[in-house]
Length: 118
Ligand SMILES: [Cu+2]
Image (cartoon, rainbow, N blue to C red):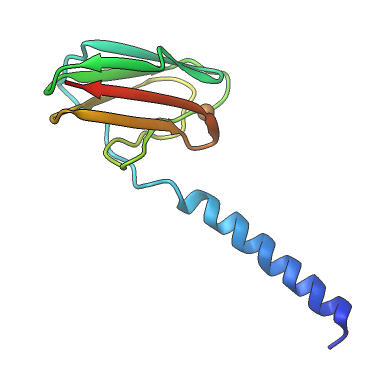
């Protein structure tokens, strides 16, 4: 096989591998909590979480309200809360245990936030 053909195949395989791994890196969706009464609200705008850090007590809930022109989501580092990519609506999660929970937007890595549960 000519060397140029081999190079072309290598590039094609590499491009496919890269495109295939991007969506797979997002953990499975965790449904928004229903019936919870959130104590804090985080605005999701282009391109940040406002405020980027919130503090709550164990058993309390956080609400994220999506307001960006672009799609964003909320993806916990540990996969414990994962929203859909949306431009409107809200997502609620109840934090049952104390800890520090880091999250980001799956398509805007510069968007980062933290929920501190005491
Ligand atoms: Cu985003």
